[in-house]
Amino acid sequence: METPANEWDLVLRGGRVIDPESGLDGVRDVAIAAGRIAAVGTGLPPGPADVDVSGQVVTAGFIDLHSHVNDVGGLRLQALDGVTTALELEAGVTPVAEAYRRAAEQGRPVNYGFAASWALARMETVAGLPAQASLETFMARISDPAWQRAAAPAQLTALLERISADLADGALGIGVLLGYAPAASPEEYLRVAGLAAQSGVATFTHARDLIELVPDTLADGAEEIVRAAAETGAHMHYCHINSTSHRHIDRVLALVARAQAAGSRVTTEAYPYGSGMTGIGAAFLAPERLGERGLSPSSLTYAPTGEQVASAGRLRELRATDPGGLVIIDLLSEDDPADRALLMRSLTFPGAVVASDAMPVTWTEPPADPQAWPLPPAAITHPRTAGTFSRALRLLTREGSLALSAEGSPPCGGQLSLGQALAKCSLEPARLLQDRVPALRRKGRLMRLSKSVSPPWKRSTCASSLGTNKKTN
Image (cartoon, rainbow, N blue to C red):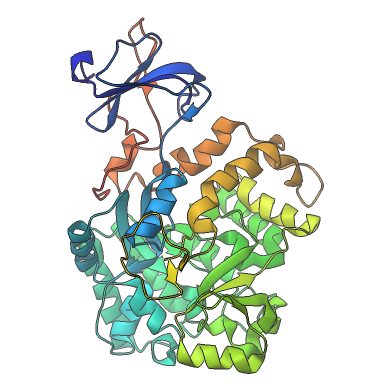
């Protein structure tokens, strides 16, 4: 039912209203009631507060499927980038019930949700470590070989039971950090995908190494994801396809396109930066393995000190003393037209969504108040935490001509419209998850076409672009 005008709290006047689902792109007024959009139209009655937003765009809040930020300061940065729902789906958490309890207790400035964590479940069932529902726990143990080894049959059974319990407790999917445990068997991954298919959820995978990078890998990372989708029927979501594919993006995207054409549900995401970020203790950042990706120690910047790692010896020292310390990794050169075109092809791939891979804030000195705002200079993080969606919109709408395919023809006709670009940030992520998360059926869009004659554009049940602190399931 439509909210009567006398219950409106706010009316935004004269903005350029863009709704990716209905195709609306025009100057309208938007009424807000109880944190949701109550009406969209022209000449709406006044509310208790009217705000002139002429010259600005009013659209649905962005849905980030891949955010590792759980601190309030980092989430505020994401909110300033237009994010109103930030989900931890690639790494996930385990036990998920504890993560939801803690988030509700602490409060969140945006909507939130979690996947079950294959990596943390492995730490518990394969390495025998105590279960702790936090990314910090994973980062502290990131380099421990005990959780990375192949699982025995009984351990695999316990692993699947742990994930199943998390799904029963409201996990939104299964996050699989496969690239961090290269000894995990392809058969284990298929079992996890089978559980996802049986449970009606997606997996969110950080792919194993590509065969071009590691010829003796147990399975090619891209082919493994596609195979799991075909053999199990699971929805396989390919996380940050830009950073794990390196300069082999065209081959990987072509493989995904063939799988999609054959009927497999494989979806992709990308962020608009050539540099990545992870814990310095990651298996693929060992000094002896950097050459696989064409990297050297100087390709890494250690966030806590801001230093460019000077040598293999210094890298070994940092990996031993602070394995979870965050490090920025130079993967693609944004100044190189060829590398920039590869990055653009990841973003413009049909159906690809924008996701940040946002990282927690690193404090270069002990914080006096972790909830201080604005964040002081001692708080640093990767630019993608604060700028992914704004940057993606600029690249997609103003620099789309750089997204040439390998054959020289621009995908999606080259430059995207603003509505098409916004859909990658809001509507498409909502659709991707809405079967599991019914609340997302009313997010990522502003309104539905109304049957009434005046005003012609209305919204009844879709979520507004304003965030709340309630979880999404």
